[in-house]
Length: 155
Image (cartoon, rainbow, N blue to C red; front, top):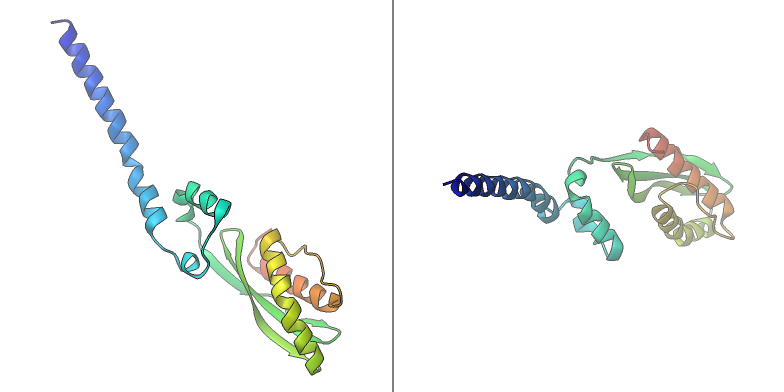
């Protein structure tokens, strides 16, 4: 008779442990199976996907915001970018405005802006290396990105 209460208590404790373990599971399942707008646009790969799924529960709370950076005048025109962040992570950068003085400047911008965009996304910062032959464009792009990040209060 001394053994029965111990078995019942141990069984109850085990059941409580299992239930409390599974109680957290729906949140993580919901977070990893629910598609977001950014996950549909840009598929994740490799380590980014595993890092994303490991922080799945906290990613639900992150808000996507965007801001347009200041219009920056440079030697060949004016440009401004729109930066979209999720939490404090830069998700995307688009050209909000580009005015160039001549066709050559337009062609140069069309070539270097995708490279500058890629640089900002990989460094997650406006502190980027300029593109050789497009130093004015690079500087204006970085300044507009920083302005947008400042408006979004992202360090």
